[in-house]
Image (cartoon, rainbow, N blue to C red; front, side):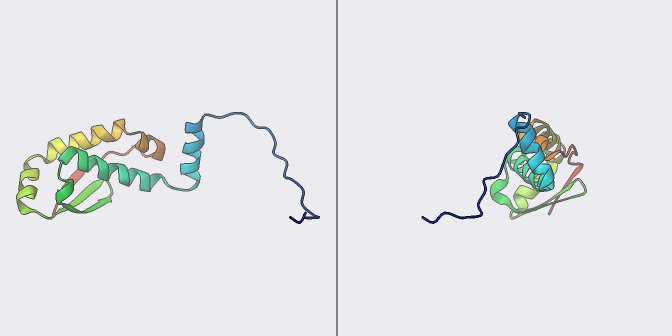
Length: 115
């Protein structure tokens, strides 16, 4: 192994200790990962609240409106009757989600549109 003539080890100054949750939140904020984490949490909440993950072929979230494309018209018509309950359940799941807290977004889903 050759030694590098100009190599000098970097000095690391001591800093205050911080909780890991604070560092993780800072990492998410600096790298602008919040919206993506929030979107994933909403999609997971849809799967959990509706039970229609197997029939969901497309998901899209824009301006607080969750657009869902379903592959079965029968499932879509059944979910139409349950939209208010599913919306309420999604927002409850988002309030409990640690991922949403980490993302820093406090927004609720306003509406669900089924296609």
